[in-house]
Amino acid sequence: MRQPLVAGNWKMNGSLKANEALLGDLRKALSGGIKAEVAVCPPFVYLPQVAGLVDGQPIALGAQDLSDQDAGAFTGEVSGAMLKDLGCEYVIVGHSERRSLYGEDDEFTARKFAAARRHGLKPILCVGELLEERESGVTEQVVARQLDAVMDLEGVSALADAVVAYEPVWAIGTGKTATPEQAQAVHAFIRARVAERDAQVAEGLRILYGGSVKADNAAELFSQPDIDGGLIGGASLKAEDFMAICRAAEQAS
Ligand code: PEP
Image 1 (tube, rainbow, N blue to C red):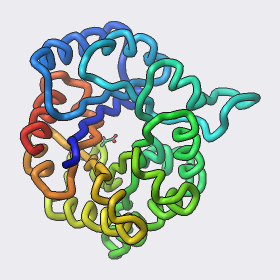
Image 2: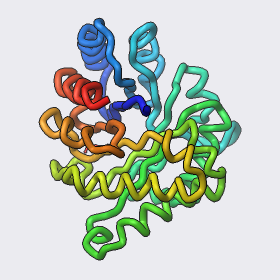
Image 3: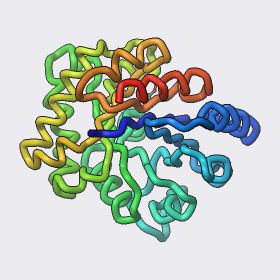
Image 4: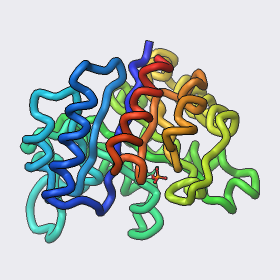
C-alpha cells in the first residue's frame, strides 16, 4: 500500500509575511491529522523560516532544486548537505522549468538525483513530455529516456526511497490538465518501466501527477490506480485549494 503524497512547489513565490499566513492556515486545517503525506517546497531563502513553521506539524519540508556538487567554488549553488542541515526531507530534481529554461539535461538531472541521495534527501524526480512530443506520439520514449538516465547512473534500487512526478509540460501552469486516463496511462508505463528492472521497487514507488491540479480535478486524478498523489504548483499557494487537494489524496488512499 503506497501512502499518497501531495507536495506543493511554490516556485519563485512567497514572502516572510505570506509564508507565515499560508503555513498558519495549513497548520489549522491539519490539526486533526491527515492520512496523506503533505510537503511544501519553498524557495531556498525561505527554508529556515518554513522549517520553523512546520516543526512538529504533519508537513514535510522540501527544496525545489539542489547542486550536483557537494561543496566548493560553485557560486550561487546550494548543496544537498545544506538542505539536509535545514531539515529538508525532499528535493525536486529535473522540474521541466529547470530543464527548459536552464538547459538541464537528463544526465545533469541524474547527477542531481545522485547528489540528493548522497545527502539523505528523497528526490522527487520530474519527468514529462512537451506538447509537440505528445502530438508526435513519443511521450513514452521521452519519459523512458528521462527515467533511464537516473536508473542507469544510480541503479533501480535508488528509486526505492525516491518519488517520481509525471508532469506533462503542456499541462504545467497552463490550466490544461491531462485527463485521468491520459495520466494513468503514462503512470502505468513508468511503473512497468521500473518493473522491468525490479518489480518490488516498482510496486512501492510513489508516482505523483503534476500539471494544473486543482481542487475540482484532484479526486478524479488521484482515484487512478497508479497515481499516488500530486506535485502542485499554483494551487499550493492558496491554503484552501491546497488542503482540498490534500484531502482528495487522503480519500483516494
Ligand atoms: C509544477 O510546478 O510542478 C506544477 C505542476 O505547476 P501547476 O500545478 O501550476 O501546473
